[in-house]
Length: 395
Image (cartoon, rainbow, N blue to C red; front, top):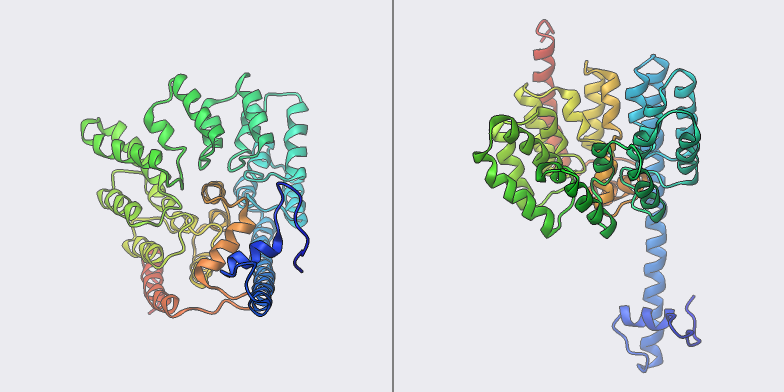
């Protein structure tokens, strides 16, 4: 398994690296070396099996999500809404569903929106083909680059920036990206008149010093702003907090939600990408309050795959939340953006990361003790919510 020969100049020596990882010098006894390499080989096997299990679990998640989308298509759901739920999915089946939606009248701009976050050959073929068509689809193509940070994506952004592309769409396409290219594009947008609040909305999920300096600066300056401007900043702050689960992020998120001087959907959006106990409790509090549309709360579940994520989806879809809009609880544009901010390339990797965080096994969704606690509260909250929506419901 490990190479014994010396590597070429500039290369790496697998054996030396393995020994270093195990804290064993190359001049150690043969027994120690053999034992270290055996441990390393065992770790490789465990990692390989773990990846297979994660892959299997993701496939279950994707198939379950696509089953729901296909069911909603059969019910003649809104094609635009359903195409938005395909964001980040790149399997043959997902492309077959895109084709079906297109055949059933899906507009080209919505089709392009469904490939946000995808850097595959199929996605690039669609972008290139669209740009060759009659009509101005530059902004729609740029929008499809959300969550994509490859050299090819930057070549296209820079090329389209010279034409008639919508600058707000361009800004949205770099949301969640923290590369040097993204930094240069932010500077370019600033030079074209984008204010700090506009730039703030491109920092979703980004935990950098620069992002936090801007968040805290605008958070403190809100009192000096007019009502309209302060609400705009609050919305931008909430959107930028999506995917951030640190105490610092929660302090700001809780303050903004408590103030209620922002769009409720953005309060929910701030929870996208979060699968922690604290995030689930916040979702339940939103549902329990009756002030937040359940389909908006459900949006925050996009890409998540834990036991209670599915409990909330299933119950809400069964008990009256608008089914078309509930599709966005499976995947949506900002979920891909947040994944990109974490260095995750697609919904597949996002759900695998969720699996790791939530410790969900590959063969079954077994609730942890924490999840059982949340589920117990969930049942009570959803029962109260159902009675608010349907007051004549029998006890």
